[in-house]
View 1 (cartoon, rainbow, N blue to C red):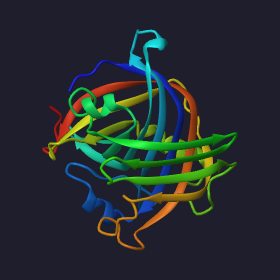
View 2 (tube, rainbow, N blue to C red):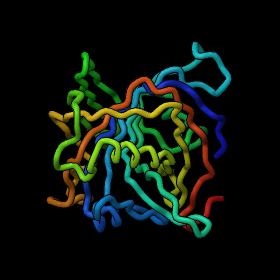
View 3 (tube, helix red, strand yellow):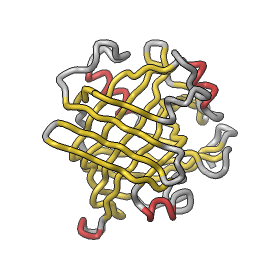
Length: 245
């Protein structure tokens, strides 16, 4: 899939992160992906992102569109041309954009499911809830900007967490073909994260005991990004035979 370079502004991005036992993540992941570990544990979560001014690069901002979006993500590694790569595998995407749901998997990378988002933002307080039209996804996160990560986080510092997620800028999304994954790379013109102290978090995906048995998954931390100029670059699809085509 070849798409034009897309530019715009990330008005708000919340990364909700869980620590997961590696063998559990390995069962969830399709080939060629394997869990990317931090201090012996895997990481998975949800990216809740509001985009504005999204348009092909070169077009004026007033022609851009906006949307609320959610991507369930798992930090992964894989081998490509005898080199180990890292990024994220995205098993599920949800969006308020009808355009995304219509063209996702055909023009935009990855299948997108339509969802209703309910968002409250006041000063440094954020509450984002979503429910997908197909009933498969319900999600809620609420919290306030903080000064530091939880003491229980796998990351030793905010800088460690920032570096880890900045390296995971390349994502491969599930498609209707279980052996084919659409690639998309995020390039941010600036990169700044803040800790978010979470007061409430719910996720039908991560609370599904068939995928994540009791005791194998724990909330780790949440991060916030605001007002980030960025570009999306399409990348060659990856197939389960380990080689891009």
